[in-house]
Image (cartoon, rainbow, N blue to C red; front, side):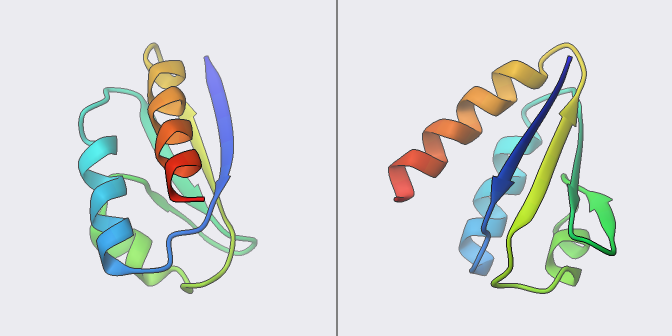
Length: 79
C-alpha cells in the first residue's frame, strides 16, 4: 500500500511529534520537497528541509494506511 499526504511542519515541536508518531509504524516513510527526499523517521533529515514550506509525506508498507489515518487525525486537529 502507498499513501501520500501534504503536510506543513512549522516548528521543532511539530517535527518531534511527527517523528514519534512515525516511529510507531513499520512502513517506510519519506518526507520530500521539490529537491530533496529524507527519511520520515529522522529528526535531522526533516529539520534539514526548509521549514515553512509544504512537504509531501509518502508511506509505503503494510501499515501505511494506519499511519495515514493517524496523520490525518493530527492534521485535522491542528487546523
